Amino acid sequence: MWQAPTRRARSSDTARAHTAAGGDCRRVMINVIDTKNNKQVATINHGFEPPKPPYDYEEQTMLDPLNRQSPMSDVFLDLFRDMVAKDEAYRQRLERHYSAKIRLHATGWVPGPR
Image 1 (cartoon, rainbow, N blue to C red):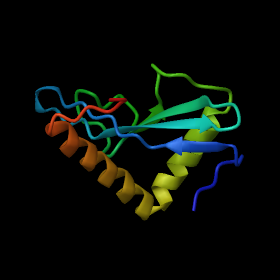
Image 2 (image 1 turned 120 degrees about the horizontal axis):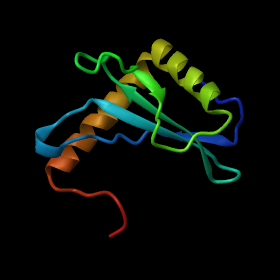
Image 3 (image 1 turned 180 degrees about the horizontal axis):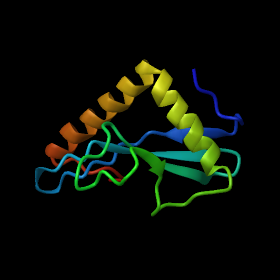
């Protein structure tokens, strides 16, 4: 099982689905948080399948260019890629979480405080 290089880090595997007009991007964003300082140290963007044309120039798993990164982000990216490659149970968990978010969004559910 994957372990972060520090016990102070945790990941939040929040699926963010592009569902406008019925879209389904099949991508998740993984936010890695340093729990001691409550700071985001990496944001990883992961597609469940390799990109297809016309987006085949994009990487399947990458540091998200629109979100905060840190000097440790590359380390977390490598660890995440290794985990996804070797841990079938984790891959399946990500897909189940993503599917649940898609179903909730279809019902009109909006995340956040009420």
